[in-house]
Amino acid sequence: MKFGDLSELAGRNLRQAVLRNSLTTIGIGVGVASLVAMTSLGVGLQNLASERLSRSGLFNAIFVAPQTNQPGFGRAQQARPETAAPPRPLDDNARHEIERMPNVVEVYPEIRFPTQIHYAGNPYATVVAGVPMSDRDNGAYEGMKGSFFSAPDAKEAILQIELANQLSSQPDTLIGKDIVLRYAERQPLPAQGSTGGAPGFSIVPREENLRIVGIVETEPAAGFGGFGRGRLLIPLQVAETLRAAQATDLRDLLRETPAQRTYDSLTVRMKGTKEVEAAENAIKVAGFMAYSLFDAARTLRQVFAVFDLLLLIFGSLALVVASLGIVNTLVMAILERRREIGVLKALGAADHDVRRLFFVEAGAMGLLGGMLGVIMGWLIARAINFGTKVYLDRQQIPAIKIAAVPWWMVAAAIGFSIAVSLVAGMYPASRAARLDPVEALRYE
Image 1 (cartoon, rainbow, N blue to C red):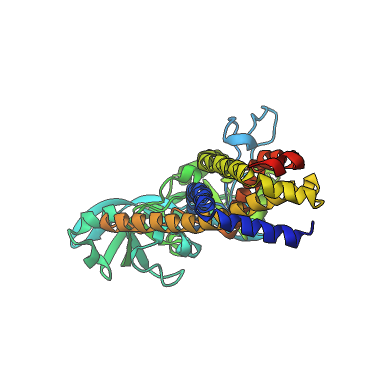
Image 2: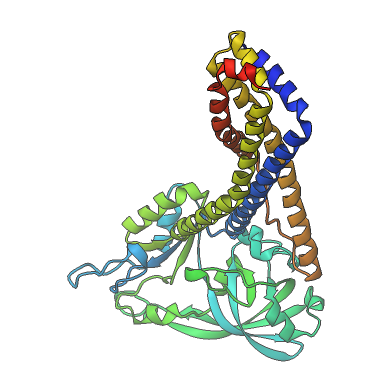
């Protein structure tokens, strides 16, 4: 029997019991809708987490620190034997060496130092941090009041909201105002003796006027472990030109061999996440400790995979229940169409033709139910996003999208619905194919 004849006959049979078949199809649609809705939550939350982490700039960043004689700091660090050469200093030479590595966009130090600012004649203790211009797209600055730095060398500042609240009871009025930054500048002492080495440095108090251009709600993460940068943010280029004294200065002073200034850590920004692992290995070979968030990302992906699996299992339960409705519908159709099946076999239809007829009917109900379920699941996902937006708006929190229905989910849901329907139709189809045509023609 040709497939066209089977399709026409199956369609006629489905139309004869339209109410029962419609209810079965709706049951499949409800099962697919629950599957799509629950899976969309997992996909949406995973997309949200990936987007926020990607926008933070942490996925394409490598954090570099000098080697130490103590074991620790992840897989890269090993206990150094006493006879081993001293670790390489993380100085300007190392910084330029890393900058010349392939696919490196920028290398910058983590500049943070405690200081004091003056506003309206009052002093306030705070921590200043340098921020690279590449952080403009950082998710921490989303929804900030005011604007980001206008230029890398602009004498501008961004306040963290807690510091802004200390300066004024109306933080928004601070934008455009000037503050005075008082800090300790490091000045190297002139070279002495025949070696020409620099024996140390002096500390000179300095002042710098800064214009407040923005206020950020959250403290941008940086450095190892994602610790906050500071409460007063300035362009990194400006922070480097200030030459403010930091915690590493005492370590440089105690070094036996005078050398250029060293860094506690460097952040290496790559072109993309694909280049991070190779660059991280190259930095380790160069004699430094390197760490990226790929290990944490792998763990995060595992957590989301388990979460998606649980949602998939619970969402599939309703579809399994709906498959029982297909079995019931087709079994009832066999009882009602015994004479028809007998006539088909008497006219020469083989067992596999009868079996294919019931498979086509089950597949048609699965296809229609899958399409209906995808539409219902998409509407449920939209309703979830809308309800979340309304709730977050009332809490004065930026809206987020926690449910997503990508195209691959639509195709997978419809395919899964058809597959489940065909599996559910196996028993009725086999039972119909085994009918004796003589007994079937005698029925009723």
